[in-house]
Image (cartoon, rainbow, N blue to C red; front, side, top):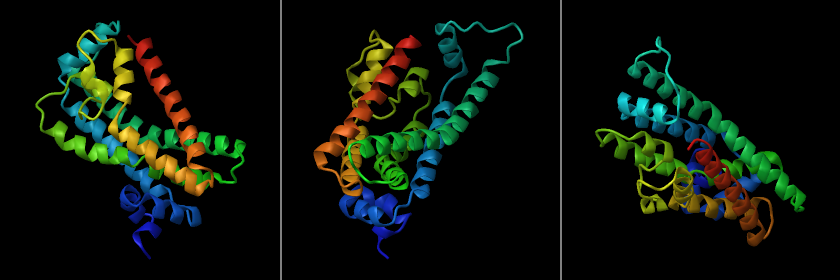
Length: 233
């Protein structure tokens, strides 16, 4: 059995041999190994990021959002711990739901376009196509650990790595614009490329059709991200 045929081996092989890996997935899909890795690394990244946030900076963010604390509110340190573990649990438990929903959207869209791909194969392509985010997490964790503190703004916008257009933003730039700039990211482009190759091979559609479907879902995701940033400005 080659790396492309193993559920764990595909985690690595899809990054440098996507064509062979997705051809193997088309014959025998696997998904839980990549899904668990993405969820665990996401949770670890959140934990490491929050561990570098100062309680005073966390309270400043709450104050800017207009959240008034009652007189009997816990200490800033305790509230930061609540936020930390809430974020960790959210990353660990909600991330699988998000990947399943995204795979479902791809599956329904491709079926409407005439593909005969099934949901399990769509899920397998999705979780393997998003593995560049695991690479980003592996790089960002030591980067964050090497910093003394992390600002809440950097943690929320994911600006730990200079891999996106967020460096163009200034202190006066609105959160919605920052959300848009940080969405144009090298790892996101890598994901788009892998998903396009994957769905082209597994769903047996043209490369142009696969790219159109992937870009459409990505644009909707970016618009949701920008809208949420604008809503909490």
